Amino acid sequence: MNKGYIKIALALLSVAGYMQNIAFAIEHATATTSSNEKFEQLSLRVKQAKEAQQAKEAQQAKEAEEAKEAAYVMDEALNIAKKHAEDLDGYELYYEKNKGTRLYFKRVNNTDVGRLDLIIPRPNSYDTVVDILWDLNGEKKFDDSFVEGLTSKIYGLDFIIRQKRYKTGTGSWKSYYHALAKKVELSEGETAIVFVSSNMNDHDGGENSEYVNPIVESANTFKPDIDSQRDIRNGELSKMYVNISAFFIYNNCCCTRITHIISMDHNTLPDTTEETLRVMTAQKMLNVANLRNVLTRNMPSIHIIH
Image 1 (tube, rainbow, N blue to C red):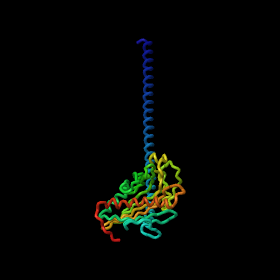
Image 2: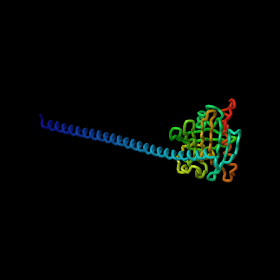
Image 3: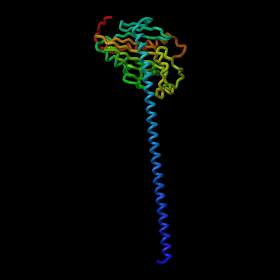
Image 4: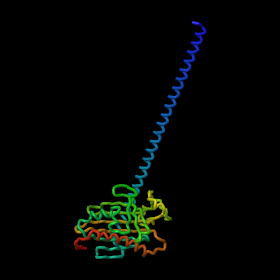
């Protein structure tokens, strides 16, 4: 073969080998880059999953601690309510009707505590009474001012934060409160339902000062966050507080007995008289007494031995 042709052939072979090396290098670099990107993406996903898990665990720990604090508040509230329900010392009779409805008041820590003793003269009405008083919207059966009840938080079985809304006689203005609520079966045939407000952060848009519960001290350190509705956030509703409220329901052979304890902070103007505030609380308590009429309608009268 001609030497010139040999040189050309060798040159072409050299160029071909060089191009193969370049192609291999490019392919290897591309594969390496792709592998690195996949590794980085995987690492990012692992990191994000780990952060999400940590956030979830932190939230669960926070909720568990909040539930523990709520339970402590309700234990104190129940014990205080029991004392006011079991002992008549200090109470003065405010209203009485047919010996089946008695309303008392006394002053405790510069605020009113009301006590309503009510007899429902209907046999086998115990479960119905408990269900109505615990139901979120049970008040509709005996209180015309009641609008609706809502669950704001759940801490356990029969243990929640509930919101209740009311309207004025003309319906032109509405009020509301948030309160811890718990139902406890004390014994067979005896149930307690307890409510208590604290300085919860419900993001109300009003100019409300910090609330201090004068009856249940532990409530003053319990400050959960409530995801409230827009009208509350806009300050369109008047805010009230439940210093303490409790229903003790007893099952008797021929009737159901209720002892209702309540102390309200109506959050009115500073110059509102104590008598006016007492009238407001009394009206709310006597609305509960309407339950007697609801459950005994169209029933024959029963003689109750006191």
